[in-house]
Amino acid sequence: MSEPLMPQSQPPFDEQIIREYLLDNPGFFNRHPELLLAMRLPHQERGAISLVERRQELLRQRVLQLEEEITSLLAMAARNEKIYHFNTELSFKLLNCVDLASLKEVLADSLKAQFQFSHVRLITVLEVDMDLKALCEQRLRKGYYFGRVTQQEARRLFGAPVGSVALVQLATTLPVILAIASQDATHFDPDMDNLLLEQLRRLLAHMLAKL
Image (cartoon, rainbow, N blue to C red; front, side, top):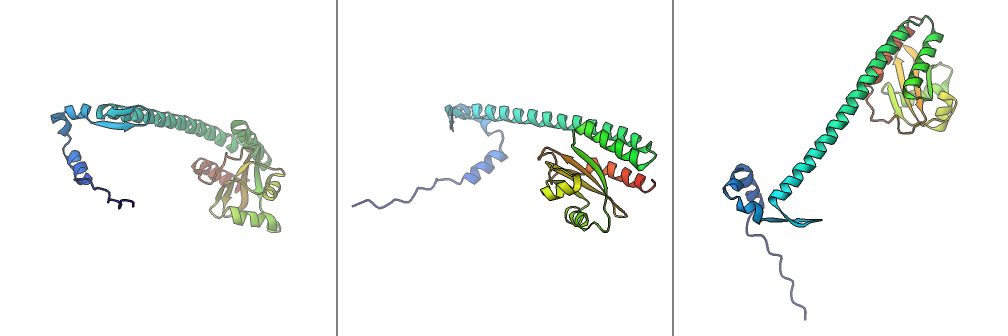
């Protein structure tokens, strides 16, 4: 006959009270330094370690994490600075364009050379082009679209399959969209910030209204 299961014993203290006490009394271990070495914590690789060793390990991990974050921020800052200078230079080139043909050529050549885009187009959305109108109404509800499109949409926009696209509505008063494509399916994604394209969108809308 099996013995009845005994209820699991509860700790004779409230862990939350101990936690709050230690947080409210940071000098506790200064007054009892022997506890730092006497208390052992389970470790996956090293068996058991002291509180001091565990704290040092956590600090090392935090330092590595901060170094990675700083490296990422520096890389992002360098990338944004590079794009800022490119946008400034491109803006001056576009302002010197005297007609639509030269504007399209400068825009496409500059973006392809800088970012290795496969296609850059300014597309006029005509009232009679129902397929293109439907595509814009579906993809450009917010004025921008970043991500992948269907093969049929890619052929309609660029005449060829592409990996990912950026679609920008230049202005509500202009039936023109800026369409950029990359063969990299991950280059444009829905979570991208549209800040970098906003300056270009405003400049193109201003110039197209005058050309």
